[in-house]
Amino acid sequence: MTVGKPVSADSAQRSNLRAIGSAIRRTRTERGLTVEQLAAAAGLSKGMISKIENFRSIPSLPVLDRIAGALRTTLAALTEGVTAEPTRPYVLTRAGAGVHVPREDAIGFSYRALNSANLGGGWLETYILDLEPQSQRAQVTTDGHQCIHMLAGRIDFVLGEDRVALAAGDTLLFDGRIPHVPINTGTAPARLLVLYLLDNDRGALE
Image (cartoon, rainbow, N blue to C red):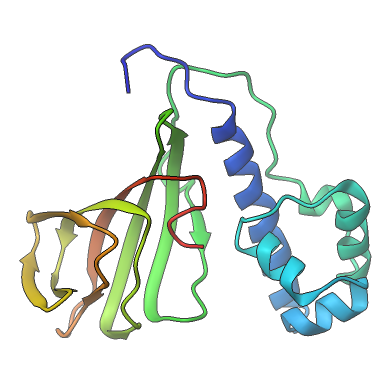
């Protein structure tokens, strides 16, 4: 990214996607509802609820109103984190202000989205990933490249047929199209800074 070049307004939209999706998922969980139950109560498809919660679709006002009603909450509560800030030449995320991204298909993985930006030819997304000991997840792929910097702990990173040992201070850059998964085989938590340079706007964790 050229220094001083304004970050696209798409970044604000992406932040709003996360804010709304996270609010719906959090409220649904607090109410003890499954995705299927919320979809039925709101008169929507399970797929639509899943897309909204996983930041792949921003709901229209009527849809959001139906979801709010099904969750016995208000539109204001579900849109509390939505902003309409003007475009600036940077994206700033204050300490502790990242958005937690639940991963129901993984055990011991805790993602926190820091920020994202449209670079013109693709998306840059940054996350903090906390890995608990004996974490479990199947290998995945992403549409782009990925860079991992170890902040704390030790892990084994499985990349295709290779298994790479990483410790605090190590950095690994690779093509995300190769099936991969980090594994914390130790007894202490590990923390990673994860950067995705994606070829499209689908989102690394979608």
